[in-house]
Length: 455
Image (cartoon, rainbow, N blue to C red; front, side, top):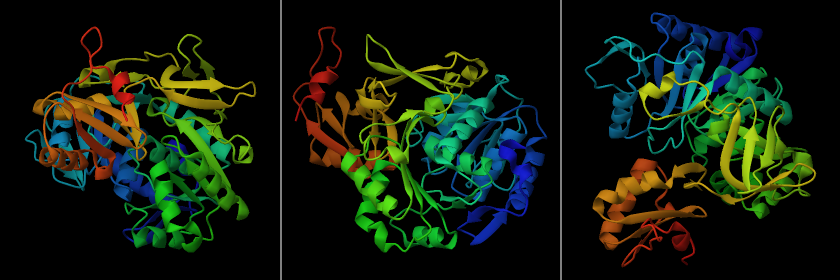
């Protein structure tokens, strides 16, 4: 069974905050087998799993692996139009979601489960096991195509470096449809450790109540979550079992890293800085806790089994390893494609590697931005607004600066509201500015470099 669920019985596996109960590995195995029995009633299929951090989502994810289906993990909180567009584009045979599926091609097949009653669609590649969105909050139609081997290799490498063992318990502070959150789940199940499932955020008292009830030992966060945690002051949260903190999802202020690594070290704990991409399943490199503060500013060494090098012409970081995706998908037909990368990923990040092998990220080469820990494709944001007039979007730190050749504060306020709802990001992430004309390059394209240089 996937991730060795059959190796553990009475040990605690999952604390479900919504039901205030512990499930053993035997209980979790039973829940997975129940969903697997439903999935086995069809040929190899595509499963759309609209996730929450709950038992239903975890069981459906593991069951899709167990039965050989391919699962696409998506946010159950996506706006209905985005959900409908993805369903039309990919035509999944199964949909797991906590809400109704008002689509004539689907009929209810179980609790929170819907099945397409028309004939199976285009075949899936035999190695395809998992699809993760490149920008889960926007409902992006582009997926990363991953194999079971990708997922298992990355889980093994991460759990080895972090030293995860059966005594560990991680709180799901990140959504499981996000590669970082999913890696927390995978690594802990792999090593017979436990997980506390909650959809509550750090600012809700119930989150920390769950942390204390489950006696969680680790916390995973993107930079935005650590900014919140700094304001909350972890020393006042009464969480004595915390001994491990990990950070990924974008560059964090070195001063903030130093603050938390020093604080957890005083408690006898560890702080790990990690770097990765969904295209590499989750992690590419990890900075050992023992390397802080000496290596502050570095994202560490490649994970076991991985190799990193710098393209001498572009300074782009190139990573090779068993966790590199097969390629992208933009439609159902792409799910039949095989491995297009051969285990090598051009990350789109500019970097340097020291003689000791430690990696330092120096910038981005792609049209992506990390905002509050979420990767946002800037072209997709432009497409959402382009119907209103000429627009260009650039990422600056934790905000998106949006330049428009039209509009006023009332219109920009409406755009901001729409983007907050669509991307599920705080309104402070969007800064609008009216310009007379967008700067263009010699070939008539938007000059993003010039926009990035504006104050």
